[in-house]
Image (tube, rainbow, N blue to C red; front, top):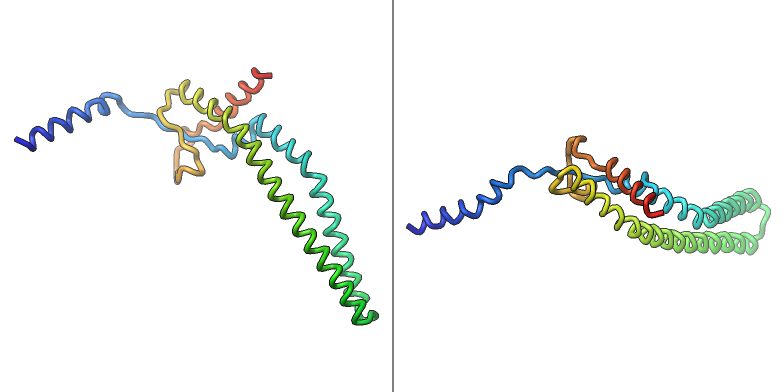
Length: 173
């Protein structure tokens, strides 16, 4: 008798799931959304504008250090040990400062990217929700972080999300 009651309860609980029918699933490549949407391109342009001068300065300093190293290699036979040590120390100090400054700039760039990414994430999630509602999709996965190994290209909502996000950004202006 107890088994029959348990079976009836399980059947009763599964009826709403069976009646609901199949749920469609889609996925979005958020990296593409960030790179290809108008908001994403604006954010990347902003980052380039902000950090390009620093990158150029780092490249110039790196070139200057390389020239010092070449000159040292060329002239070291003519130098005293004291002069050689002095120049090697100077080069090492410049390399250390460059590495320290580059690491700080890299950290700042990562923070700026994260901040701009979070500003895009809210509108992107709204766009995903709109596309999912329009296409009657019950669940949307993020392609890279969901552990998705394979999915049919027909389930890819990325292009539709980018279009929706761009349309929402235009309407907001």
